[in-house]
Length: 101
Image 1 (tube, rainbow, N blue to C red):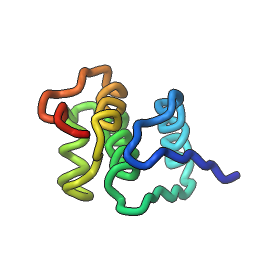
Image 2: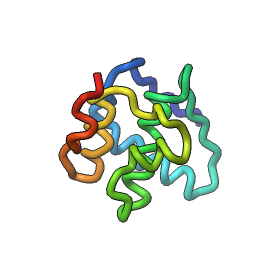
Image 3: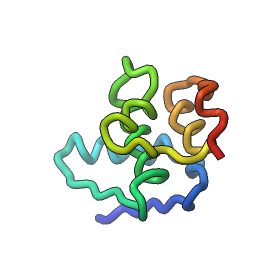
């Protein structure tokens, strides 16, 4: 069964974002293949990857910085995306991401 979860370019995430990411984590744990993409692999893809880090690596204090180091220095483009990532950790947005558009 294909799962499709579009995000608006330069937007935030859906209200059920945490449930969706957790569902994808379960799929990965079951050995299913997952394809995530967007045009530049920065905002939407970066947000998804940072969300995975936020949930799968609880010791990682800054999932966005981790994804920017591992994947792309431009990962997570908007304040709304950054807020969504840190919300998964139950944390407020750190000051360094407050200047995102």
